[in-house]
Each structure stands twice: as C-alpha cells, then as structure tokens.
Image (cartoon, rainbow, N blue to C red):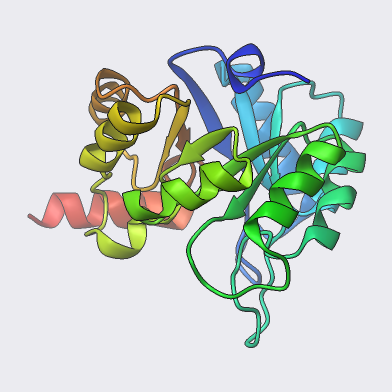
Length: 222
C-alpha cells in the first residue's frame, strides 16, 4: 500500500472541488472543470465528494491523487463525512486512493475502526478529519494513516485557519498532518507548512466563487 507521503509530496496543495447542493456550481461538469483547473495550476491532489464526481474526474483523464469522501445531507445523518463503511467501496472503485472520514466522537453507523479497516481493505489510505486534538488518539488507534484539521472550522472565525492545532498534532503524533479549513491566503498556507503540515487543502478560496466575492467585499469594507 502507498503512503500519504508517496502520493502527496511534502508542502503541496490539495484543492477541494466540491459544490453544495443547489448552488450555481452544483453540476458535475463544474467539478470536472475545477479539477482540471487545479491540475493546470499545479495542485498535487484533489478532494472530491461522491463516487460520481470521483468517476467523472477520472473519466476526464485527471490522474492526480484523490481524497474521496461521501457526504450525507439528511437530517438524521449522525455525521456528514463518510460515517458508514458501506460508503467506501464506491469511492475507491471510482478511483479515490485516500478516503477521509469524520473522526469526532459522535455516534455513526460504523465505528472508526470499521471505517478505517474497510478503507484499508479497499487498498486506500485513511485520512481522519478532526475537530480537535482530542480526536486524534482514537483516530490513530482505529487505523488512520494521517490526520486532517478539516472540522476545526466549527470553532473558528471566518478566514482564520487553526495553525495551533496543526502544530500540536505534528508535535504529538508523528504522522502526516493535512491542514484544512479557512485557508484564504498564501501567507496562511506558508504558516501551515512552517507549523509542520504535510499538505494544505484549499476549498472555498478557489472553488466557491460567491465566497470569493464575499471575501473581497468584506475585506474592502474594513
């Protein structure tokens, strides 16, 4: 099996190419265009939601490593990101080499160990999406290959990445840390690398045009 380091070079950018349901970019063709643009710009990987989008990007000839997730947009879904082991096979079959999952201590259809085990059984790597450093221990015990700060945005102001969490995870656990959440400037990406992040995921600042407009509007008003 590959490792995170062998798939994603150190200090590289992963672009999250996703669209919220009902937004102007909620079309498979847009996701493919975002992925093609990310590849053209030099991104080292992609983060995609849904096996259909993973398959579409692969069908477009894009060979970048893919972090696949499945989002459940139902009121009774206990966690949003890949909370059921049955969601993993479609992602890996479509071409995802890494599968990310919510690693917070909330109830879900499958345990963290079952999810990580299924990811490994499918020949992929398991990336644990954390909210806090306290989530890391259980994620690693379950078999996570790397840690991501994805869910830390719940506790942060807009446009502020959790550099302290990145640093803490790097220092305490000795596994690759993927920084994600609220990255809007090259300066913050550099801060994440300096804190020890293996890679940084950028989403809204690249693939949500209305959020980009809002960012400039708010910045110009201060």
